[in-house]
Amino acid sequence: MRSKTIALSGTFKAVAAAGAAGVVGVFLTACSSGSDGSSAVASSGGSAGAVSADVSAVVSQYSGQAALDLPPLKAKPAPGKHLVYLADTAAPLTATIGQDVTAGAKELGWSVTTETYAGDPASLATAMAQAVSEKPDAILLSGEDQSHFTKALQAADAAGIPVFVGGVPNTPTTLAEGGPAGVSLGNNFLTTEGKIAADYIIKASGGKANIAIVTVPDQKTLTVENAGFTKELAAQCPACTVTTINAQLQQIGNGLPQQVVSELQANPSVNYVFYPYGDLSIGVPAALQTAGIKVNSVASTASAGTYADLKAGRMVANLATSTEVQAWLEVDLVARYFDTGKPALDDIVPIQILTDADDSSATLPVSPSDYAAQFKKLWQVG
Image (cartoon, rainbow, N blue to C red; front, side, top):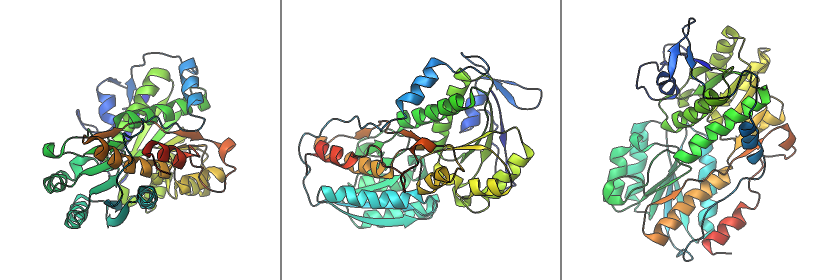
């Protein structure tokens, strides 16, 4: 597999130094320099154009309904708790997750207030301070690595308010240790999500994919997923190549579509585009179609927008972890924390690969379809 990183305009920074965070850091630990300035990643198996049985097995495993592999609580949660959910206005999917958090909490007789922030550390710190001032039983948020709000997290812990985060490669800790009290969809989920996306592309391309990854280099959540993706490509697809397009959350749907169009016009060999965070694709498939660029687009963390693109033929696959499931897992963290009195970890892999064979639903399918019944059984309610 060959790889390189592209900086899109002066506001984007190519991550190319040894030890740098992100997907390129993975490449640098096992790469030799190519004559074209890209890097060749050592492959541990497979051959050009071949698709291994392991790759096919992974694709098959995650093509059905997602699984919720969790043990039941010891006891039914006590009602009356109040939660605060922090929604990131720069990451539209979190607003939907917040709505679903409210729905899940309602099943336990809990209430939820939603506060918003603008996607930057300063506004997140302000939102956290506001949440702490409300003296809730817990604070929840999605996709924010604890390094982005260390002081605010410590302040919440000092106030005796546990914080729960979904979709981050963090380790839950006690309040005294100053970390999140619970983590869902953590390192195992993120690494496996990247692996599943890689295996889908390897199989769909017959082991002949030239891939552009559109990512955000300062989001640890995405760098872990990208590492899982590139590690699997290195192991299973030596004929595949990777170009990394670095973006920023604030550019979602605003400038990024044309940036990707320009990059693919300059690199016409790219035949797959991978979005480790689905909302990064907002406006991009339509812009590519308008520009007459034919490419296969694949998105993780599927949303209503990515699914609409799938139905319209502008994407070939979505890796869906339903927002309902993401949200109810965050509520589950709170329930488990108070059930056991210990830090909670729900690091399962509830993913379903959706293709044009699964796009008959008018809206993004929920997987598993009976998620609510499964959670209520775990919670001993309903």
